[in-house]
Image (tube, rainbow over all chains, first blue to last red; front, side, top):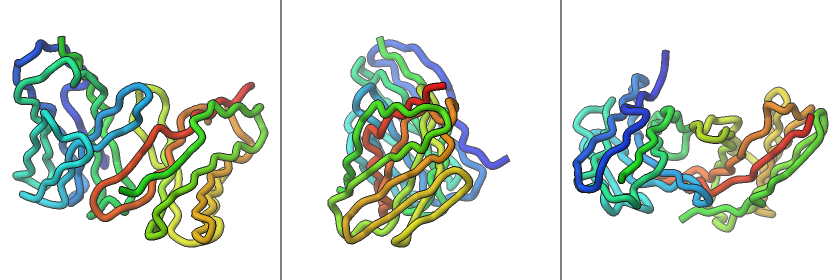
Length: 113
Length: 109
């Protein structure tokens, strides 16, 4: 089954404790991206990747890191999480660019205390 | 950045009616548009996409694009309570995407 898989689905942690949210797709997609969604603000793009080893900042990259060492994986790293990063996070992928249908993961709900 | 304007709603329609969701955009270079549906707490799912001027139909859904007026719409015929969700009009882009907050639709049984 074609899918985008995020882990974990839920996480409660404390300020400053490094965490990684994994994202994996099995569709051989080149384009992958991360979004956060907060009430009243819609989906905002954090980072995107056009291909392996190619990443770029989205609209709200501060406090986040990403890597794209393999085509299928695009982890989101919070080196020193803070409470303002409490949010619902989505990973998405598409065949090659942002100008194609995006396939979303089920989301990761992060709470930073 | 490519952005759009959508009425945030809520838009309420009775069951069986036609729901009309509208979107205007400012970037004349926008060539394609995607409509996503998002239920509360769930991930967005693609409903339709449209690249050309005119109408595109898929089941109960019709997407309309008017590049001269910079206007995109999504019509949902025979609206069902299960159509109650937030609908996001998203212009396609080479690199990044703007999703916005969308229009919340409520279909009243």
